[in-house]
Length: 270
Image 1 (spheres, one colour):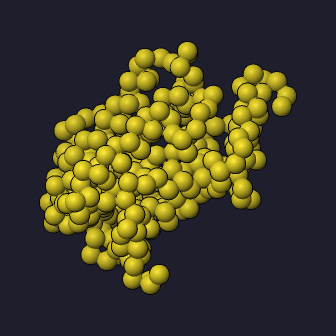
Image 2 (tube, helix red, strand yellow):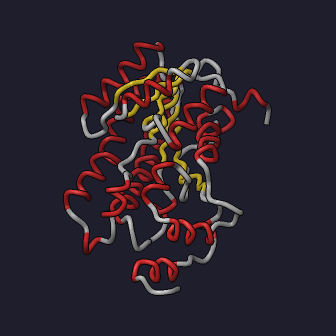
């Protein structure tokens, strides 16, 4: 693979949820590869501060529960840069308060379920819908952040995991409908990734259960996922569309260890 194949010179990308974690790492890497990047986030102050640190980046406000905000985001980016080549749908509802209450279906609050789908599925769909005319014009592509939990059953995060499974199917649908118009659409499925939000949301003992299932010597970092996004967004991935690239350190590739989670949640020793 030539170095030019993974460059993004002259391209314009939107990274939603770009003010921290995987989004921040991706925004930094895409600009390092030559793209101009819009950091779209509900945390406008953090997005603005980050954009000030990165040449070729701007901050754009985004509320995925507000349709007008989503369409305005795409319009603002196109007005600022004159084109759109990459939409990285990375933002999701996954704060500590949400994660602690997203358990199994029997205990699920309807309001939490509805809000998770409003942000993760409906908001992502509206962003894709707003971006697609511009991506068709440039032969651009979409990279959706999903989760390895969307491919596995688990004892927790029923709302989050099922919403991400819906985004996987949306990824395939867009790849099928817009491939003939020159648009690719793929997804990256991280495992537990050591973002600041994750460190706050999940206790160390729970993180250790996942690390023990990882086939590497550590959990993934945001920069690991950013590399996958940058690859999928680049010409090097020109023959890849409608796919889910699992980047979870091998957790989903072997016999699962659900017993440890069951013991953790019950408070009993494994």
